[in-house]
Every structure is written in C-alpha cells, then in structure tokens.
Image: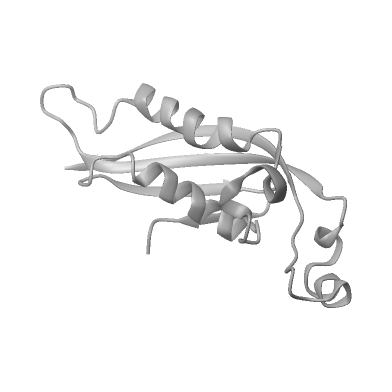
Length: 136
C-alpha cells in the first residue's frame, strides 16, 4: 500500500520578475509591480509530499527527520533571506517565478530521494497563490 508523508517548511526571499532581453516597458506590461527593479519579497510556505510503500521493518515511507534535513539543506539554507535573482545560482538565467521556483526545489530534493519514491512539491507564494509540481 502506498502512503504519502508530508513536511511543511518556510523561507523568506526577494525576487524580481523580468526578462533581461525585454525592455523595461515590456517587462512592466507583463510582470507589473513584480518587475520592480529594487525587488520585492515573499514569505514562502512549502509542502513536500513523498509517496511510497511502507517499509515493513520501520513502518515508514520515509523518515520525516531525513526529509526535514533535506529541505533545510537544499531549500531553506539556499533560499532563505536571499535575493533569488542575485544570490541563488539556479536563477542566474531563470526568471524566479513561483512556477520556476517549485521546479528547481523539486529537482534539488528529488535527486536526493530513493528512486522508488514519488514526490510532489507545493509552494505558496501568498496564502492564496500557490503552485504544485510532481515531475510531470
């Protein structure tokens, strides 16, 4: 039987949504106030859900402490109190939209999990705006 375990996390980051190859006017038209050249910030909430078979020896799908530590090292330490455009190499040439951020987080974490585990990452940019990605 397959069961899903989830872990919530939080980080604060600044970013600017824009394309370097577009004029300021075009960026402003597409991204609006998110194109602020001085950046803007979000209090991101993150839910990482891992699905797999229950290990008959441990009773775990995955030790949640291991998941917690992975999220801390791969996401919180890398993104918290950072300017995503400036401080995080993953976004040097990638617009840090919520959609792109969730895919980057998924890829960072999925590579550290056993291959037989499925994962979904949900990222809340605001309490009402969120995105999910499960590798598809």
